[in-house]
Amino acid sequence: MITSANQPATLWSDLLRESIVELRDMFGTHQQGFDAQTRDDFSRLFNGAHKVASLTSAQESTEDSHELLNALSAIRGYAEMLREDIGDQYEELNNALSQLLQIVHTGTGIETQDSTGVGLTIASEPGFILTVDDRRDNRELVCRYLSRTGHTVATAASGEEALETMSHSDVDVVLLDLIMPGMGGREALHLIKENPDWRATPVIIISGRQDMDGIIDCIEAGADDYLLKPFNPVLLQARIKAGIERKRWHDREQQYRLQLERNERFIRATFGRYLSDEIVTEILENPEGLELGGDLREVTIMMSDIRGFTTLSEQLDPSQVVKILNRYLGAMTDIIMAHQGTIDEFIGDAILAVFGAPQHRDDDADRAVNCALAMQEAMADINKTNRAEGLPEISAGIALNTGDVIAGNIGSERRSKYGFVGHPMNLTARIEDFTGAGELLVSDSTLNHLRGSYRVGRSQELRVKGIEQLVVVHQIMGVTT
Amino acid sequence: MSSSRPILLVEDNELNRDMLSRRLTRAGLTVITATDGRQALTVMAAEQPGLVLMDMNLPVLNGWSACRQARNDPAIKHIPIIALTAHAMDSDRVSALEAGCDDFATKPIDFPQLLVKIDKLIRP
Image 1: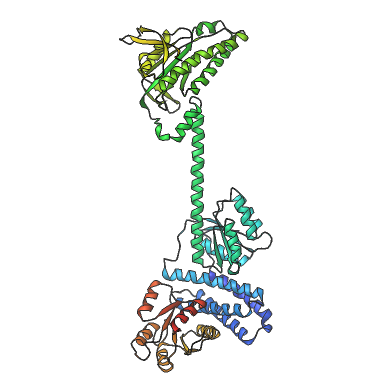
Image 2 (image 1 turned 90 degrees about the vertical axis):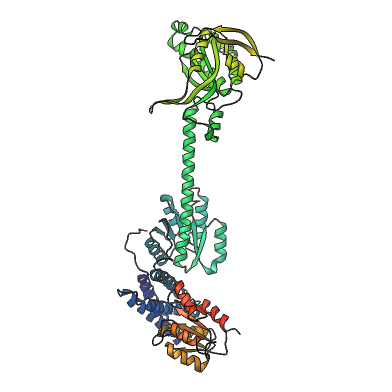
């Protein structure tokens, strides 16, 4: 059963009337067993209820709030005395009286609220509350009370029913009665706290004062709070409010976590193709170190291509061309990533990679040189495989140059990539044009950035299209051991 | 709980007067009753009760006025008074204390709590 906030609220006075009807029936059944005093107490209790009924049905209530509280006070007093006198002998009557007392509490809570206007109403974000109790009138009391304060309330008459409701709706707070036939509150609590989807849903245990041990057990088992019967309605509101807030925080946290995971997956998928795992992880861990907006930074640029590949490809089957190319690019990609280089793009058989973006490191130039040497070394293996398959041998020339480029997301809304722009990019391509098979040429600026020692071969001055000064380049033969 | 002096219960509402005097008697106290403020002052002077439980909304002379008068009467000003009010507002609590009440309890009365309050005031 779901009661929503905009349903006309049933007054506690209706519940009181129902409760009195029930009590009258029981009194009728048992009155022969009662002494005169008890019978008198019952009749006065009923008088009080009658008084409440006539006061609450009257339209103007402000004048009579004192009278109403007098009547409720009398009902409470007689009900408490009757419980003391005959509660032990008549369990059913005892329950009915306890129920009545609970309604009186609710009634006074509302009355105080009305007479003070503000103060005792605890404003809370509306939530979805599941109230679990085997007694219908208890469920209805809580239900009516909470739906009046703006909450949506679902009810369940047993532990099984409660779990069923939880399995198909997002419950904010569970109000759980401890003692129920079938699956009791304790077992239901265990099942809720064992379920990863429900664990975060706050559970408030409702129990009689005599069952303190049970309450302590439940709190140890993960219950978030408890209320003693008959409970104070203001206290109930306060506990519900706290429970809803706890649930909301948890939901928000969960949402952020999912969003972060989604972002991380997206970043890995987007960058993973041209950045090494290590760099992606580093970016994810230090997002502030990465400015994708486009910035000027010093990088070492690598340009490599297969010597005479265009001529070679004209003599081969397209499938053979693709096979050779993929084998070569695959091996080179692995080596570049192992050296924390960023592959900007493949242009046919040419590879454009950058060291020092998005993440700057002090050994960018050294890694670029070592990477290039490793790439040249790997050619032997590639050619061995090519030979074995009857394919022609290939050789590459690699050029390195260090300078300031603009790095960032370049492109349009529809298609953009992390790329590099600047004069040093063009210069690298020009140097690459001069490389011979199996050769590694580095510019003056790259050589100046190197910290390790390398075997440097011949140096030469190149006249490059579009640049007035001569460009000095150096041949790197290997690492000095 | 026992007291050599009776407790005076001032309450115009018959049902409540009966209920409270029954419960107080059951708790071992001797109870005498009055139904309005003026009667209360007369009984206080004549019987010298150990304590007064006074409803504030009384006919003839209301509880606030009865309290103030009692506090100005040397013959009865020493008798402790617990105000019974229908409102849980702080302003009522303040007016009860200003009128010279020693304590106050709101309706519907939490009986065990009332007994604690009585006990505190009648204990020598």
